[in-house]
Figure: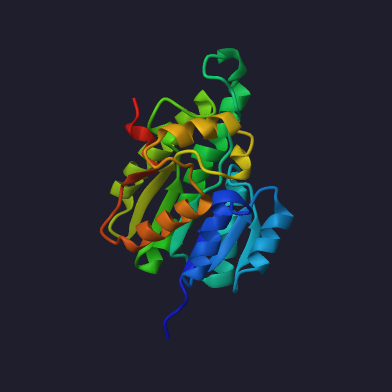
Length: 243
């Protein structure tokens, strides 16, 4: 009897993560929903998906990241897809160097880079055992171009992009590792970015901002692309083409 594939989506109580969880569930996967703080929203989402489970865990804490994967193993005994979506940022003008304090750096890198690493390492035994394990890191166009909500955030996403390539080379052929680098996506994070949103819609070749469903579609596409690993796929409506 063929088992149902299992996916873990970190930071999936809203926005991109929630859209990814819903889409993977619609594709027939059993989904583990995760959040550090948005417990009620995470539980509601999990309750709306067949056989889904919500696990509260802060992936920047190594013990919690390992507990998250222990719960996946104890509940389902398998993991086929890990989507590292959990992330944090601070809106700081790039020229305001003093505002990008050491505390800000530690917070952002702790979730976006160290948390992604810890979760991936904890997931690796299950992913290797699946026979076709796959990791998709949700990065940002800010990791590719000198842009983004702050310098620490952009640096963290550049690190995620390089981590993706390094891991892909290290853990193949058992596990594939890819990343998606979205541009401006309409989420609760960006709902106040009115001026930036209008500029994007006027300038980028596709003349619109992204939706969480756009990114979820790409997660599914990458997961199906069995001969693709180590790629950082831009999903920014063509913004990277602009000078």
